[in-house]
Every structure is written in C-alpha cells, then in structure tokens.
Length: 454
Image (cartoon, rainbow, N blue to C red; front, top):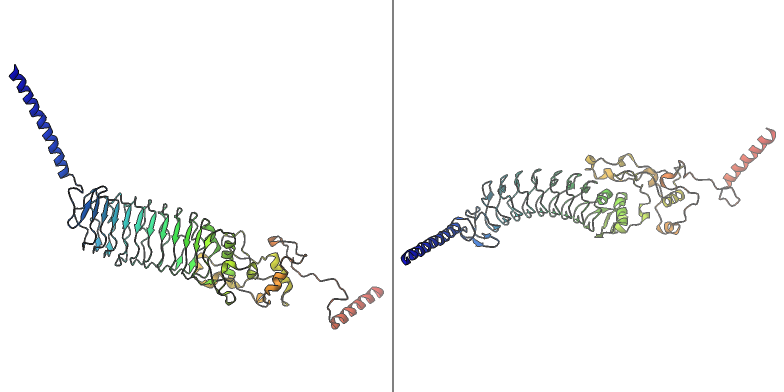
C-alpha cells in the first residue's frame, strides 16, 4: 500500500517537472526566434529597448544596413554616406526615421511604402538630392512631419504630397525652388507649418496654397517674390504668422491680406515698396488690421522714399481713384471722397470744365494671366491730372473738414454734373477785369434796348 502511494507521488513529480521544463523551453524558444531588439542588432549599430531604438549614425554606411529589427520604433541613420533609397530598402516598420546628412541622390517612387506607421521622416541636409520622383512618399498616410531642408531641390512633382492627409509640418527651406505648381499642397488639409524660406520663388499663383485650410504659419522670406496673386491666400483663413520679408515685392494686393484675416504676426520689411496709388489697398488694410507688423519703407516715388507705408495719410492718396466696393479685384473707379472733391474744385485745371479725372487706356485692371507686366496694374495720371498743381500740405490740412457746403452728396450717390462750378452772385467786389466789366455793360445795354423797343 505504501509503495503504491510512493509510486503515485513519483509519477506526479515527473509530470510536474516535465511541464515546467516544457514551459521553460517554450519561453527560451520564443525569445530566440521572435525578432526583437534584445536578440538582434545590425553590425556597427547600437540598439536600445523601450522604445526599441536602432542607432546607426556616423558609421560610413553607403546603404541602409540589413538586420534592423522589424519592430524598431526609431531608426537613426543620419551622418552616413547613403546614396540611394529603393522600393525594397526598408524591411522594417518604424515611427521615426532619420536620414539627414547623407549623400542621397535618388529616391525611387514607393521607397517608403512599407513604412505604413511612419510619423516623422527627416531627409534634410542632403545637398546631392536635386530631384524627387512623383510618388516618392506614397503610402505614408500617417506621416506628420517631413523634413527636406537644405537640399538642392529645384522643382517638386505635382503628385509628391498626394494623400499625405496627416502631415502637419513640412520643411522645404533653403532649397533652389523657382516655382510652386498649382494644387501642389491640396491634399495637406491638416498642415499647420509650411517653411519655404531661402528659395528662389518668384511668384505666388492663385491656386498655389489651395487646400491649406488649417495652415497656421507660412514662412516665405528670403526668396525673389515679385508678384502675389490677389487670391493666393484665399484658403488661409486660419493663418496667424506670415513672413514675406527680404523679397522683391513692390506692391501687395489688398485682397491678399483680406483673405488672411487671422494674421497676427506679419513681416514685410526688406521689399522695394512702391507707395503710389497701387499701395492704397494695402495701406487701407493696415488702418483696420490689428497685427504685429514690421516697417514697410517706401522706395518710390522719390518724394516718399524712406517713409513708412503704414503711416501715410489720406491726403497722400488724394489723386488716387477709390476701389469699386463691389469688386473683389479692387478695380479702381473715378469716385473721389468729399475732401478730395473740395481740393479738385479749388485747383481745377483751366482746360477742364468739370472735375472728372479718368485713367489712361494703359491702366485697365489686368487679368490674372496678364500680371507678368508690372505696370499693367498700376494707376497712371491722365493729362488733366498732371496739369494740376501739387498739394500743399499745410493748405490742405488748414481746410480739412471745411469743404464747400454746396457739396451735399457722398461717393456714388452724387448725380451727374454735381461738381460743375456754380457762378457766384455778381457784386461790386467781384474781381472782374476792366475789359470784362465793359463787355458786361454792353450786354446789359443791348438787352435793355431790346426789351424797350422790342
């Protein structure tokens, strides 16, 4: 009886030991077989757990090393000599990939398509990277931050950012970009920061920023921008920071800034501002805006050189037509303010019977496709205006607010001929010449004889 109980306990102990050994063996097998940072690390690289990080920086690699654990969350490959990125380069899944400061010259379409959960990609400081294929970033629908600064990119394919719906930060500064294609950023609906400074961009078209409805910061300084389409910022209703300093802009359409109504920090210094009539819309915008702004020094006309455009006075635009209130284009009309009419009435040209001032044929508002001609959108004085004497500032301000009481209409309400001068009543003190008096006396005598003798 006792021997039977002892045998049973022995058999139970053997089974228990077998199960324990099996479990231990399974654990060892899983550790050895499962790809992880603890068990595998590429040669010349250093690996860290929690989060799994593979650091292969500054090892003179010419290609992406093999053996990177599949579950690596961060892979650092900066400061090497990697030259190409092909579609089969990356056999792992990671969230952060740094490839800056290499010798990358070519990125094949779909090179990153296996990196489905990638959130940050840094390709900056690759001076040999001159072009990109369309679809180079295909599949990166979770990408949030893309760095391509300080390369030598001269152009960007129209489909480069296709379906990058999650992108928030895009760094393209200090490249050699000459132009930006329409709708280039149209899929970047969540982009908040766009850095384009330090390039060679010359113009901003109507649709260049279409789709960027959440953009908060736009840096375009240190380019060669001359022209900005009046609707270029139409989707930038949430923009708070705009840098356009150190460019070649002589003017900026007023509609541009009206569309960017949320701007709080504006830098426009370092441009050759023309402060003639073409500057009036921007000047008027500054009168209403509540914005932290840099100075805007005038370079022309010569009489205003060195003055700040923001602080010009209304009288400085006395000869300028007002914009048509119903036109988004800001097309000018020949409507003048009451104060301006007073000055015109007082200084009317002898060659004109009415104070009507029209633009010459060259001043018709240019269509968007005609904006290449700088002079096409500028107001030019007609011959009658050129004959007017210059405004004397002291005289103008001495009479400011004391306009002719006979002017009782305002702006577009005035009927035709409202500004025809009214002859003053005759009095002995009227400043008539002797010849005029003689002619008037003869006329009165002739009229009297006609009435008497009919």
